[in-house]
Length: 266
Image (cartoon, rainbow, N blue to C red):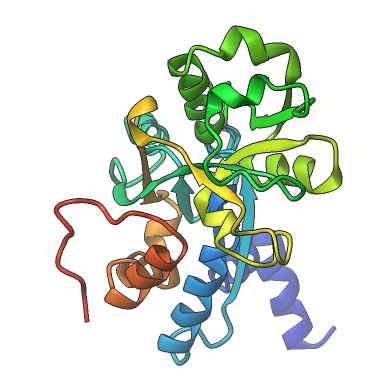
């Protein structure tokens, strides 16, 4: 066996090889409301730091914030976590899974949306009409947008009337898919999703923004995990999220920037 091959075996069996490979990957976990916006943010991030990211692959998984948080607690190897609710990054910090409580980067908004009904001007109370047979929301137990949808329906006084009409998505992106597929007539989803024409071309504008006062704020935050803090690429991404470029992209997708807006990095 030649010297190089022996070295490879030593690296593999000592665990060093695995660690080196992990450094070549940036693992991101994000709430599903970021599915389109984060794609654009990461495109600009890769362009800005092209030299620093040579040989680094960026991998993203999307899901509900609650489920991702549980996966991190169970040892999932994510480096950066983008949560739809700062509660989850705060709880992870208390459990010593992240480097801090998280940085609030945006306030999310909810909308009524349907690929077959123009919902502009439609109120939550009107969802009791017979023509709306099924209404999709994200699962309130682990999806922040689903919990806020529930709060809005309660605030409107129609939760008990509509409960039998509700169908649940595992996350906010799957909730939109329920309406896309015809499994629901209406969906209460994230504004950031309907801002992208890929959702359903030609119908993205047929939405009604919900009154933010009818639910607790959707203060969204990101945090470095303990593993991510050791990766230069993860630290660069967190740095990039503070740039004017990243903030403008989020604003383009309907996210409200936090107040007071922190000074953007150049």
